[in-house]
Amino acid sequence: MLKQILSKLQRKLQKSDSLDSAGIDSGNHTSNSGNGVQCTNIGNSISSRLSVVKKVSSAVFPASIMAGVEAVEPNLSFKDVSNPQKQNLFITKLNLCCEVSDFSDPDKTTAEQDLKRQTLIEVVDFVSSGSAKFNEPAIAAMSKMCAINLFRVFPPKYRSNSTSEAEDEEPMFDPGWPNLQLVYDLLLQFISYSSLESKVAKKYVDHSFILRLLDLFESEDPRERDCLKTILHGIYGKFMVHRPFVRKAVSNIIYRFVFETERHNGIAELLEIFGSIISGFAIPLKEEHKMFLWKALIPLHKPKSVGLYHQQLTYCVVQFIEKDPKLANSVIKGLLKYWPVTNSQKELMYISELEEILEMTSMAEFQKIMVPVFRRIACCLNSFHYQVAERAHLLWNNEHILNLITHNRQVIFPLVFPALERNSQGHWNQAVLHLTQNIRKMLCQMDEELVLACQRKLEEENSQLSEAAEKRKLTWEHLETAARFQPAADNIIPPLKPATCAVAC
Image 1 (cartoon, rainbow, N blue to C red):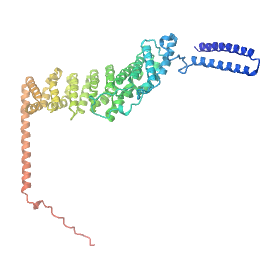
Image 2 (image 1 turned 120 degrees about the horizontal axis):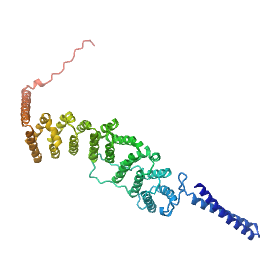
Image 3 (image 1 turned 180 degrees about the vertical axis):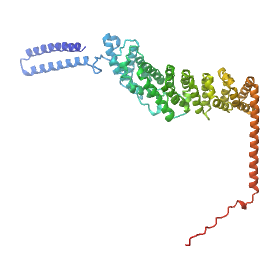
């Protein structure tokens, strides 16, 4: 290619030399009258020669050259150039798109924005057609263009100042999304390109690139987070060498969210990626993966905004238990540790997750954890929030859980029967009362003698509690009576006598 360029330049220079020499000769023939005219003609010929050289140079070596690759005019269409030049035009157009547009003012540089958008559309179509060849210069140009357009620091208004659940809040949309979407589409096609050599691309899609990509999950635009989710999943699948780093980087984001800020917009998307990753883990699970469950996923139940990502979190937890059923014990202990006390909406989510985990729990693992579990369920049965109480009662409709209860009724019945008895005596919600009566009938059908024994034991405990309460009442009455009739003089504290000085002054 270099020889072709030099020969082309030499031919044009020779042509210009012949033209200039002809001009000079004619000037000499016509300027015998004086040296001033001759000098003028020579100067004109030199300047003409220099302009020809400059024109040829600008045509052969334009400003947008990368890694010694000849580029063509960026305004040309891919249809207007030959197949060997399409790759160079592709790189040239990528370099042209490196100019960042300012969307803060809608009327500012509209022509430049339209030109850039049109160029991006052409590049996306070119890559979609499968004609692009991602050699190293093209990979470098693509990485540079994506980094310049995507990697940015979000202004404060893009960050939520509330730690509460923001499900009803309207999302904020980036004004520059039309161009950003094209860049994301291009990056996704680049990552998923079949002929892309990962050994070359990993030099540009490196750890720094991945970290800055993860920072973009802070965006409040759900469209951007959805694109990032797909792209990061593609990077994880394409570059095996980066997989441990991606897992570690996401773990650090979760740690910072749980234990420091409790603010992040992309936790749901990150967990959705990890749900797919966990499903691909080999059995038996590595210790690293179990540590991620214990130190990252289980503590994610703690933040107030758990409702925004609870569905994805539950899916990840269930994937772990499917890989190793023995992990159900640890997960349930973590749920009980972070069980909400004053947040009924979180309690509803926890009960649903607990039911899903119990469905996958074996009898042996259930017996290790059944006592604290049903103590918590008994509290939920008595909840004054009728939805929590209803949800706890509906656990008995699950066949697997009912089977676990039936085989361990000697332990579970004494735990839940007092709660059912208290409900039947005075819960304010009629639906809860009806559910309580149904469960009591179900328990009687399972083991009527055990239910009667539980009832007798409860009556004895209530009788003992009544006797203890009566004794406390009588004790307090006796103390009040004694305090009322005690002489007032006895309540006066005598003054302190002055101490005698043993040593004479």
